[in-house]
Length: 289
Image 1 (cartoon, rainbow, N blue to C red):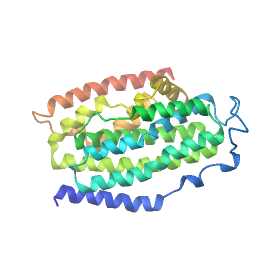
Image 2: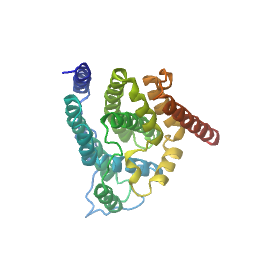
Image 3: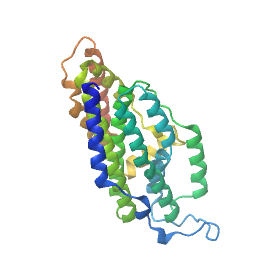
Image 4: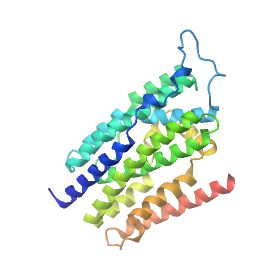
């Protein structure tokens, strides 16, 4: 086993130890006592515990999470030739992620937030469409997933704060899910760091992935409108992405501080230009808030 493989295995064993203390069951978080069947009690628009905007935000999260089979398939394919512990992590990650879509879906049904018939139709569309990463390279996919996991964590915590007054039970659910996302991000973040230390030339890949990042749910129906609502009402937009996601991973990996080589100088400059653009958009968003 190479030094890199040994280090990745250490990260995986650390993850197992941390998740042992965090392990939770979604059945214990849900307000089962408020549930009613939809045959005897058809859904009506005035029902529910959340505002329309918060309902859309939670639905968007759920519609992303339910694509888990496609995410797992993509990761398994990309990591087929990677260190064995990466494949083992994907299996563990799938087990942990499985609860996320379930708890959000059942919560929306029990609390009668949103039209269940419309939502199930959208679910079928999203799952049938599937998801395929643009990255076949294992390292590029790890960079992407680091961003995605951290962005999801920040979004869930922002949404938890936004819904706390409307539905404390949902806020607890979101914070619980965010704890999983924190540990998933931590694993991928540190794995990327190990790969960079073993070959600094991989910095060019980091610089290429970041400007092209989009959340895996971007293909769902009406995604731009959903993200606009989330930015305006759930506290997660371009400013939060720039400050709490991009800046965090860049500082952690020291991307712009790496000594440039002929192979990495141009990608670093391209990334720096991208970051200046995002910073301007974030600052404008804050002024208009």
